Length: 204
Image 1 (spheres, one colour):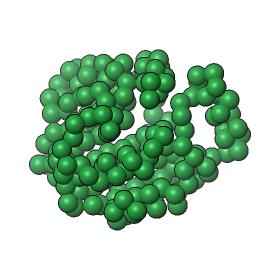
Image 2: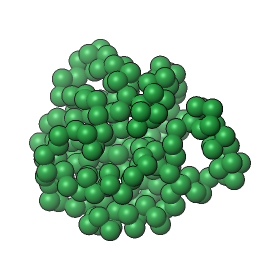
Image 3: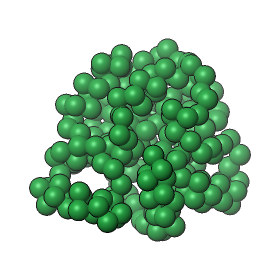
Image 4: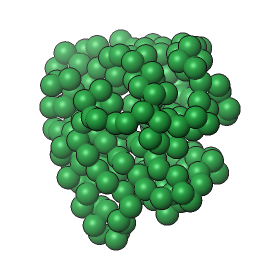
């Protein structure tokens, strides 16, 4: 976990300046997620990075707790919130395991581009299920590393050795869906914008 924190702290400024690669797909994910929200909902986002998505969702819900392992990422996120005048998003450093989150305390949990970066994704999914209220939703967007080009599958380990890439879990779509259903979720919506990623809405 220390290595992951150091990597994302080091990457934070560059990450914040990187444009969204596919804005149309990103906007569709925002719209699909917001279609499930209700104004009185409390939302948790883990692995929130520099906070752009949490801030985009803020007008649609009561409040959002947005967390990340990287303090540097959260410094940028907090600055964005101040500049935008957003007051219903709270940023907190930590992980699903380290933070004191009460069972059944959130109506929705967002895990966007994060599950494939966790060494124990199964434990994270179980924790998400625990903190969701009955009927709550888990929205995830996950890279399917097992399905990307062979060249990248070869390059990633080499990049990791020299500190240019974080830990990466090699998911398939089937593995991810099974992980969610084994935890007790039912898949309510599934969309693959491309072969190498999947967007899911799962309900407790």
